[in-house]
Image (cartoon, rainbow, N blue to C red; front, side, top):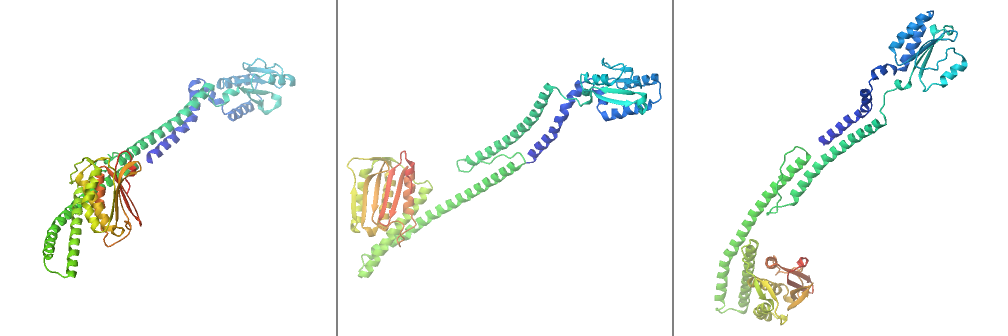
Length: 448
């Protein structure tokens, strides 16, 4: 702001020099200007002429002639003559040829009409009496005016004014161009990030408002780096904690499962057997949750090895359903598998994809058991070949005592993302449909 105010002040200081520049060239080019300067104050000349004429009252013709010669030396550019009381021209100090020798009304008018230009004329009575005659002082009007430029010089004046204004515009443009350049540099620094997703700091080498903005930006970068480092440390501690808890809980679960197996051999009442069965189910559920928790931790840490290969997905689905069919049949599910005979090759990690299907089947068992239905088929989903797994449960939005933290679906999402697959969940009170598809040229399909 201070810099631009300085530019405006300089412009205001330079602009008044336009008027002096209009006259100075004339002064420099006109060699007679010092002599002409004394003729410009016509009021002063008029007073001088009246004063000199008043002093000549009663003087002889020779004295009057002598005085006019003296005044002619002082004012060489002026025309002077005097006429006596009889109207006779006595002395003429002028280059004019039409001055009458004897003055009458007619030749006085003729003298005035024959002038080539309208000179500045002072007429004074000698000794302030009409009978003594009068004396005339004439100067051309051109020398009484302040010199001005010619037409060509007027163009130079216009050019000078244009250059001054143009210089102001250019300096202003240069000023704002540099500001814009620095702002674009700052904008680029804000949008371009490094591998860690944080922009680089910018160099500060000036002291102005933009530099203050740059300092604030650098401070923000420092805070982001600290926050990212703190988040990374917390994430590492969290993952380590989850891994340790998962590992430590497996030992007591194994012991509980062993004692439950031992109790099965002991004679128990029907109520005891139900309780033992419930314990076994909860232990299996807890084991499954711990396994999902550990898998999620390994996936998010990038320590779960991906080994993709071309696989016949139709055959793969049949094998997975063959393993789960007794479980669904035991729980009274209607299993509807509709798969084509022709092979469909997908590039997948078989172990990962089996884990995905197991989690989805387990999700149906836990949350859609009331519908007693599971369907698996190959469909066309928005131009892509997709696996559709559907149930007739109450939907994912219903809160039940079996609803967990969603780790199973989080594992599904991470695994599909790593294998470059997409998925879509559509849930309603009438059931849930899950589409799994291989992403090719339509990334907009990957919406959950």
